[in-house]
Image (spheres, rainbow, N blue to C red):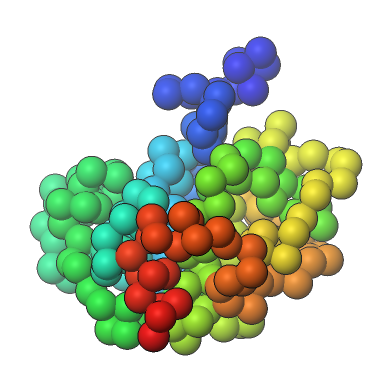
Length: 223
């Protein structure tokens, strides 16, 4: 992406890459019927999805975001646009703003989520998705499945630059989260998904140090 000149600040390496046309991709996604129907959206905190988070709040949708690395006992923040001024909505769409304006809510008290937006390093037209390697997006999904806030009918989408859509096979494991929709600055692609979603937290995929680093996992594991 850097070589082709389509990455944007803060660059592509080692992160969910920001890209030229990210705002247009968000606008395309916001025109999709499943997005329009959604009332509560769980969104990733990365730069290229800032525009989609802002649009969701401006359209009156509740946005749920996780704190970095799920480091809090109550790791999700709820952004309710009815409680935010116009200036606060703009700020709340950013990572720092979400932590500032988001309400701390216990897992059981989160609203039911009907749309999941995630960031991607690469995707393909079978629905396979590669993140930046930390596994937190997949883990957040598993936690929300086990909490009963997401189900099989919840749409999973991503926004990417066309260069991030690969033709070849991408390796997927049982805990990896595939996507149903891919939004680019040109169009929204309805994927014929060929992968099952995780059915919850896959405890056998986690090591004890990982569980200890995430307080909500430690609590759920010993509940």
